[in-house]
Length: 141
Image 1: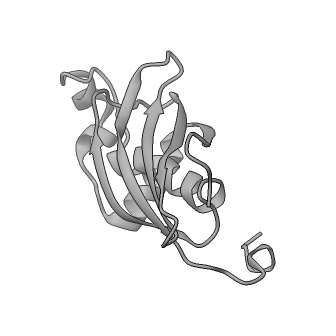
Image 2 (image 1 turned 180 degrees about the horizontal axis):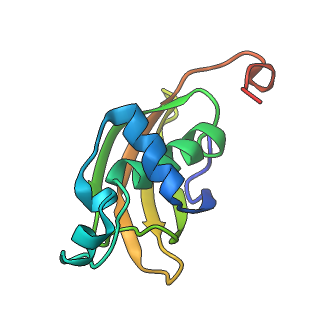
């Protein structure tokens, strides 16, 4: 388990293909993700990605970095103060705020910012880490 204050960061540029992949998985076909003319006429002023894509960067951080392999979310409390647009560069960050000594449970501060440092997601999460024997041998390539 990580020490309190340990952090991990992951950065990804968002593409139209990310929207399409998320739609394939969820069937979320909201026109603000696909119809450029309509999206330009909204408060957003352009195509935005699904919040699930924004949250997805946190899945990668928790599963791969902090706390790491075998970790799953028990709970999340998230806010989305700013939309993420096609072409934005998202940087996700997780910071361990408390770690239990009696169970593999970790509380995290979570955030995703855009390339301008503006917060697009803020919140907290709790994770549980399942012990995985030889975890390095079972990771997908």
